[in-house]
Length: 237
Image (cartoon, rainbow, N blue to C red; front, side):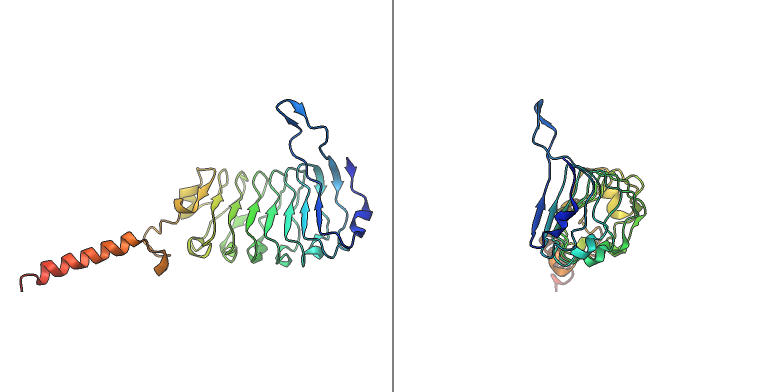
């Protein structure tokens, strides 16, 4: 319990920091062993090998201001269920990051335009915050994404680009419930808690479909139509 000491950042060989806590009780039995880390996290700039931070379920007010100095090694950042008000700055520097879990906080930032530069990101959980601004075409380059959850940010707007139907080939689901995001994908996903890929990649007119994306039934239908056409047109000759 309490504030993390500044000396924590002197652990130069630290690879993983895990101070997470789960629920305060289970079936009415209090969890007496839970952590309650509070305040501001100290700089971890001297932790040159740091790959994972897991501090979910505490009462942390702020991540290290210079967390971007760990960007060359950091792969996973999980600080869900805290009291954070800001996202890390210089997100584009975190090129090895594959997991970003900052849901259930009080983050009031504008949706960052450089988030789309996280080329190795696979999991994004930012639900239940107070994000503002707009989602734009800038998110398309995150082509390894599996989960993109920004639900329950009522002031978050913009449009989910239709280009993700093709470019986000590995995605499992989107979550945009209780936002003001608009557009074609929003029309299919805005009223469900989890919008699985099959729920929005119908390619309405196949504009965004590549050859490999076109369902077999479409090809079979075209072949059948051509066969019938030639039979009707030239069958009597």
